[in-house]
Length: 367
Image (cartoon, rainbow, N blue to C red; front, side, top):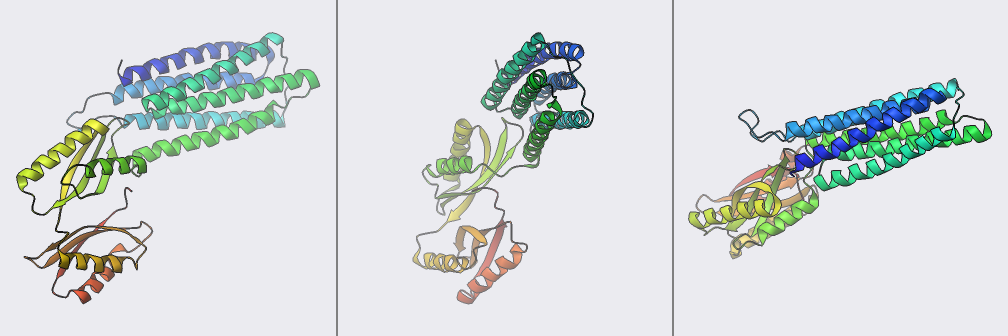
């Protein structure tokens, strides 16, 4: 079964479990008069809706690329995660409202051993469902399942607080479910906001994962002829579709035929090993020439005076046009990176007045 089919199957399990819990909790809430149990049943109904949304989102995200959406529809999964996060926040807000009302106007509830047993069973079911969702979410790289798992675990905590309040009410004849519900609701709101921020971050575009960036660059540099890898940029179009670009540094005397073979080999091996569709650009290098190495050392010394400059790469001297090329990566905290670049160029011109310096400013998008 493919990834989409597995996500649908897991979500269907969630719908079935939550619908069963809704029926039992609604019945217990009606019999005992517990607003907490009734709200818990409503929350389970929202969980069933979340699983249904996950199924719809997965189906839409799995559609093939078309003319209007050439990179596929995978980002719909992130929209699904945002929707589920909003549901979690709304459910937390509703639970908090009811909890506050319960604190202001306490209402007695009449619990039975049977009703407590049903609530305890619901706690166990939600714990198992939450762990199941989170495990499958990590296994299938599905934010929506992970979000549903976190929601289910909080539901278990809410149900447990209801159970605890019921026991306290039966033994000491006081009803603390309003206070317990308020604490759980606040934690639920916090989790919902965290899920929302993570999902929105995926849509906006997170920084390239440091571990992935390092492993990918190391893999590129192991290929004969590659002297360095820079400017790695990756874009996610859903959990399973990553497209990016990178520059590799090669000796300046490589022929077009050799460069063609090298870039084809790199793109094929990266896709095979990482599942990433990578476009490879080229930096020429004439490192090893004594005069050019001395010029590069001078540049390195100047750059060391500016901690805001994170990296210099792509250094190349074109003797035919008396031009020096290099790129600078400047910290995002710098407001005027052009001014910083101009200071570096001015100091290099003092040392090498016969050369023209052509400098590109790169963004710090990956380690």
